[in-house]
Figure 1: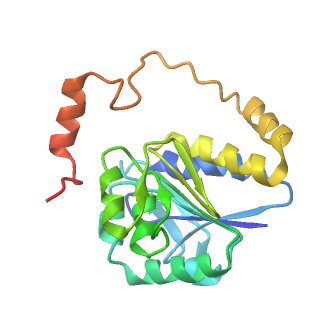
Figure 2: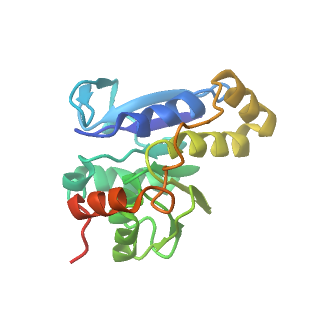
Length: 211
């Protein structure tokens, strides 16, 4: 089984690394980071780069497609090279997935029309513009499409899909070995739980302001 995690300039690192650490544990799977061109691709902070060992053109038919999000997602919405690759890869993929605002790239490629999907809470309403049905769930499965909410939910998405493919016990083993047992010091991980002034501050600064 071939897994391709798509990279683009200013992606969010955990969006890509969460699925890498979970789906990458599939038995006999080969996983590649791929971008338009091979070489290092900088994450949104600029301090970290992940190497794309394959160009997108070199991996036209992966079994699993993973699309991260991040600030760099916005200019990619009009990148026909990437969107065309997503459409072509989706035509033969077993699973097409995203984390955070990566779902907007799937939507821009026309892949989420009429489907339930999720994204980062700041971007959720934008899915409607592309004919998707937004939901605030952390992981959403609709047919072969699996979308995850913001950033850290990529770990949940990876484990969910791992269970579907390799069985619950294998997914549980990966969860155990990665010691994924969240006990956050604050209960502020969603707009429903976080202090209202923080939610409003980030909404006011968001690049996803509906007009």
